[in-house]
Length: 350
Image 1 (spheres, rainbow, N blue to C red):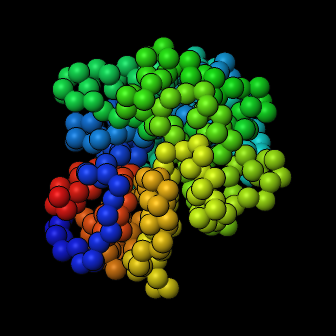
Image 2 (tube, rainbow, N blue to C red; image 1 turned 180 degrees about the horizontal axis):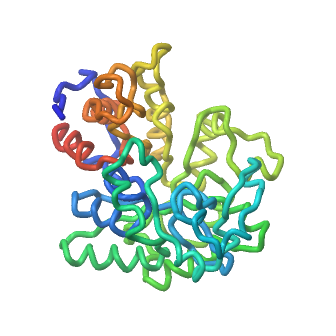
């Protein structure tokens, strides 16, 4: 792959931080099945500032690392006859889904499963590791990160995204109390801890800002979408409402930053090419809210049309140029499946 070193924009905006951080999205998930200990270790070996993991709760209240509570996309649960009776259809955050759900399995049952690559056609090299690892608990991730931090002589940060919190609460599972227990068990509930808690839901972050001392980041999706807890409560609030200056003022009451999908900072043009920066970074910085952008991926399928290389969706395009464009837009952190490319862009920028 040829790395393009020419920034797309000559006039840049300033970040709130000296060095924008690089976060490994579900670990180095371009190279190992997501949310496995080896995916996290691979990212740490590459030198990332933070690893990011999503958390859902098992039937017995243990927090585990999965992007969603339905298991069939990233584990071998469908091949387990002993769990076939747990297949069901359920409304999750207002969306009907079918499959096997984490909240129906105990952690012991979950530990019988192995992880699989989410995009086997795009990432066959990662899919070659299918079946080698299981689903880690949050406690296991904390222990691994502590060991890797000691081994490498540097603190590795952890960004924790809470998923389906209100959905879980309505099923009798208290995700935030379980999180606080795990943080305190590992002496991580203090301002110096390299831990950030994130969610697309708003109320859980408000509560945690009063109950915990770690950093809090409000995640924002496209303008017309809604926080899952708002959907369940019948509240018409959209993410677009939270992006207005008034909305950001409300977010500033409980959060230290926002984490936003790429299109909110650099929306694609009509032809799918990389667009010009919106005012969101500027507006957030006026409130001293940091801005983390997600998710940067190297495959053509995920890149703007002008940064693709050929027609093969799995081929790598110019992620370096895309990362540089976001740095020029003033973001404070970049979340990526391909940390080594994005770290190179940050290093070149500096």
